[in-house]
Image (cartoon, rainbow, N blue to C red; front, top):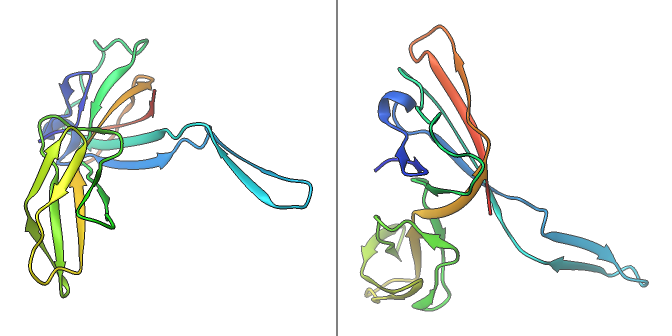
Length: 169
């Protein structure tokens, strides 16, 4: 499984293995303000994600043919997780279509796989005897806007270095 941008995979030769990935809140859809009495009020208009991906490899990415003026599909390999309070819930956002979500049951200090049934983004976890909590994981899919990756040629084991930030549209 590889990270893909606009349908093109970031190959192991371009990334020297798995590219580094991080998710952070874009922050531009949330504002805080104080009322007359000083009470802090948070106003959430929307929440979007900025995805940072970087790596180094034996060759360049080969993304020069992508149209960076239009939104691109980004399929990530860094999983996201949620711990539901019940055995049913909804996975927020979009799910990578080629990797099914999974569930883990916490029994003692271990997390063991347990069955999960999906209908769209809705899930239902099959209970496991002795489980005290559950965790649902999935690989995310984003529609993003980004600039062409910054690429550099350098001396060393992996001469091609690259990085890009993708903003969820």
